Image (cartoon, rainbow, N blue to C red; front, side, top):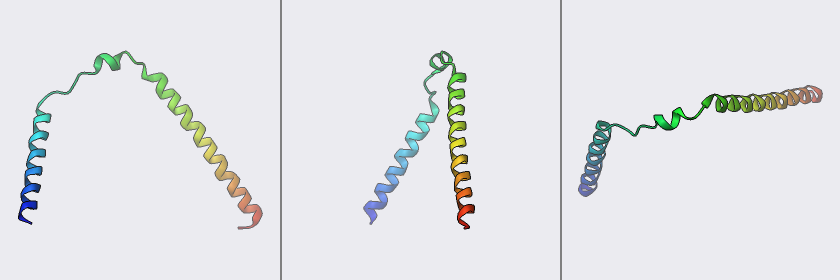
Length: 73
């Protein structure tokens, strides 16, 4: 049991040290890549697909409701 506690403490210490070391440095700069991409068209496409799926789900729910009313449930 004592060895497991020591291993756990060593693991927690290693994670804490590596986490603080990573936080101290600056991350990579992707601004040159992201500035070249126009996300407006991507967002429009995602919103169009979402709206289509929402319409399909509403139609399915409406059909189930009508069928339920006809059956008398």
